[in-house]
Image (cartoon, rainbow, N blue to C red; front, top):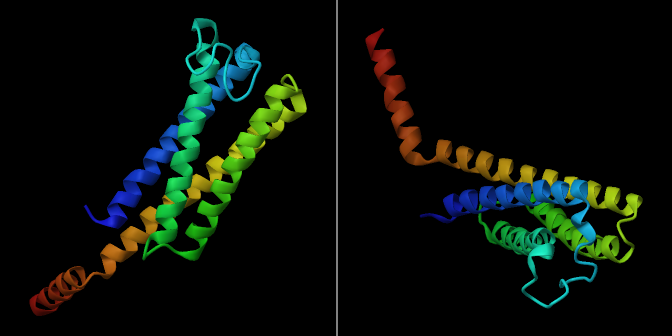
Length: 168
């Protein structure tokens, strides 16, 4: 598998995990289990929580995984030969938003789910999600353009146009 195809698959996977995290975050917020783990970053009883802390623990675990995936996406985009400047910029914005989300998530817990902080956490999450959508779309768009510029595609288009001219 070439690097561009790998980057497409990896970035779409990251976006799917991020969407799952946001969905679970909405569930955590709406059901009021956000303070079931009143300490940050771990729940009471250490790394493996009891059943009563499970939903919040899963949210935090998926958040850590998502953060790692967003950072890896940024690294892969920055290393990619065909990555455009806007794609690189938005991957950096997404990674910065992850750092902000982690920090803000900790503050939200420590401030006992203050409504303004929860709203800011959601808003920053939307910036992160929008940035990742931009990155994914640009990666796919760049790869489509690269495929259309490959010599094998150009020569087949030229031969098709010669055929159509010869039939006239």
